[in-house]
Structure formats: C-alpha cells, structure tokens
Image (cartoon, rainbow, N blue to C red):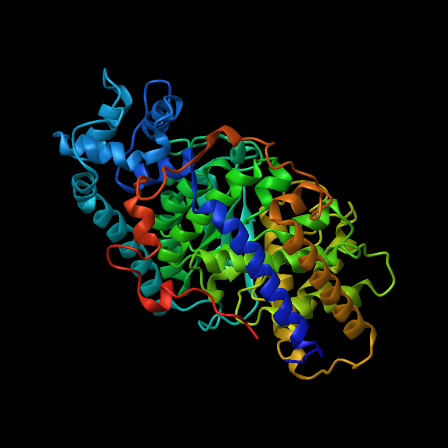
Length: 539
C-alpha cells in the first residue's frame, strides 16, 4: 500500500502523551466504582429477573446498598456474606440482599477471607460462560472465514438494521447477509443510553432503533448463526456497549457471542451528557470484559465531525484515537480488537475535499496499522438528491478500498430523507461490491507526492494532534473535556447524568470484586496470552 512520509518521532511522542493522559485517568479509576459496575458483577454471577414493576433485581439490590451508604465495599462483599450465611446460590443471595427484612451493614459475621472463598465458584462459572462463548465464536469464524473470500479481505461491508421490532431486525439482518453484508449492526433505541437499567426480554417496540437486551442479542445471533451456514461465511453482529449501562451490556454481549460493540471512552460524555467520571469508570470495566471475550470495539470519533467542522477539527479525531487506544490498552484490549473510528464528513462543496478525505484516511491507517479501522460514511452534508448522494457514497467506497480501511459502514443514498429501506441497503451493498472489486489493488499502484496536497495535509493534522495531546497531558483529561477540546462540546467534571452513581472504593483491600480481579489477571485463570496481552505500540 502507498505510504505517506510521517515523522516517527512525532508519532511516538503522541503515544507517550496519550499514555500519560490514560494513566492519569487510571489513577482515578483504580480508586472508584459505579452502580452499573456493581450490577455487572451480579449479572455475571447469574442474578436475573425483575419485580412486578419491571425493575431488574440487580438494580434493586445495588440501589438498596448504595442508598444506605454501604457500597464502598462492593456488592460482591455482601453477596459473599449472604452465601456464607446459607444462601443456596447467587440468585438466592441477591434476593435476600434486595428484599430481606434487615440490611447487612457489614459488621460482624463472616470475615473477608471467608467471603472471598464463598465467591470463588461464582467467579469461576462467570469466567467459564464468557470463555465458552468466546471459543464458540472464534471457532465459527475459523471454520467459515470472514468476508466474501473467507480471508477477511478489507474493507468488510457493515450495514445497519433498526426497526424497533427485534424479530423484524432479525429478518432484515438475514436479508442483508444474503446480498453481501459481512457485518450487521442493530441500532439501539434512541435514548437507551440514558436509562440506568437494562430492559428484560424480547422487545417489539422502539423509537429510532431496538432496545438492547440480552434476549434481543440472543435472537439476532441465533438468526445469523442459521444464515451464515446458508451463505457459507461468518456473519458478524454488532450492538452498543455505551451509556449508563456500558459494562452490563458488555457482559451480555460477551455471553451472547456478539462480535463488535460500539464502545467509546468519550461518546457518552459529549453526546449524551453522561458524567465524565462515570463514563471513564464504566468504559474501563466494560473493556476488561470485552478483552476477555475477544470482542472488537468500535470507537466514536466520527461523531466529533457532526458537531465540529471536519477540516478544522480533523486533529481532534486523531487525538481522541490515540487516547482511546491508550485507555483500551490499559484495559487489556489488544490492537487487533481496537476498531478506531473516523468519517468521510468534509463539506463536499470544498475544492479538493476528496484529497482532504484521502489524507485523513491514509493518515489514520498508517498511525494504527494493526487496528481494524472503522470508516464512516458522509451524513452531515447529504441532501435529498439521492443520485448525488449515491455518487458521494461511491467516492467514499473508493477511498475506503484505496487506503485499506478495515470496516466500512456503507453510506445510504437516502441518508438525508428517511430510515433506509431494504432496497436502499441492497443498492449500497451492490455499489460497494463493485467499487471494492474494481479498485481492489489501487492502493498498491500509487505513490503520494512527497510535498503534495495530501502529504502536507496529513502532516498538518498529525502536528496539530500532537500539540493538542500536549495540552491534554498538561491539563488532564477531565479539564480538557470541560473546556470543549473535543467536538466543540463542554462537559463539567461534576455535571451530567449518572454522577450520583459513582462512589469511592473502601481503602486497601476493603473493596471486594473478585470478577474484576480475575479480568485484570490478579486471580483465577487469566485469559489466553494471545487474547489478554495488552496492546503494544504500533510503529
């Protein structure tokens, strides 16, 4: 593939600064937890069900102890004490904690060592469920292969289904696979990210998408399991691990064999006004779960360009990619599972806009050579002219194959008119297939002019990213977000939704969370080395 001349010293400095930013955030993460993290522990231990009003048992249990000011020791501590006192299993223990006449204040009774021993079987079974789902998915991928050629040839074609009815979503996912889709995403219902609980069961109503529930994950994965045997290639399933239930959804995605999860460190802060501290804590634990499950994350830097100008703010995308990479590495996610995102969002009326888009795409591809880059289509500057829109999508496809983008979310000609119909998706898939085939080796046949417009633009964006990273390192991540360094959006460190769900852990060994300990490799059997090894610097 053609290469731009980039200053490796600047790239190395960007990574050093991003690591410093991520490590500073990590010092906060290591001393705190959230109600959603604690609910994730209960879910992984097998706690399920809801009360007659639909409130999940995990919420009732955690909320009761949080309101009493007792959660600093972690909900697992109280669950273990209930097991020591005769509860038959984690479900029985959680029901006792949630509905029992008396609240366990943690004084007297079983000691810490006894509590941890009582939780060993729960933790082991939780890890076994995650590992079994991972091994099944990876075996199916190996058997059937990825992409039309079975070798995962880039870019893989990614499309969206979003009807509100999970059964209709499953049918549309099958239809997309039959005409060439490699990856199918079920878009989550509008504003679910602001719910501080996960709905239970299959759903047939949703606005702007379909509710993300464990049963809904199961239904679509089962449909794709059947369909992939018919089409003879592995079909990847995507959903969202974001919002106020980020870690819980990561667990559900892990055990239901999802392949990709939209999981960004800053999206919820900037675009859903979720408390910055809450988001940073939840993204860490969700990514620990994702790393164990060997799931690919998709980050959301493309969204910055919907609120900021794509030319002026291009460097903020690269800055965020470096930071997302460092945060994911701290959570044990390997490079090959970090699907960093960017988008084809420059105003199409700007002269040489295609060259500017090509510069950004090539820059990102070279900065992150082992990462499955997610390339997003134009949306901001689309119009109701579907013929012009389809031509824009064709140029997007051309840049994607030319620069070897890994995952391409296909643009729809009716993007600015309505939610795409089945036939719109068919046209997008056929158009992308034509361009990918016609220009498959174009990138191998060209060279970039050393001092040309593309090279100069890429070098400019990299230099601006390095400068911004220096600023973020100096002031800290939370302060940078507060002043609007990303997406032209300002979010105060103490503001936003979910702030009351953050709490400090008990000092020393007082906080009990054997599941997180295991995901961090501190106890029990760690994941296989090729999965658990933290990402290394990409040169």
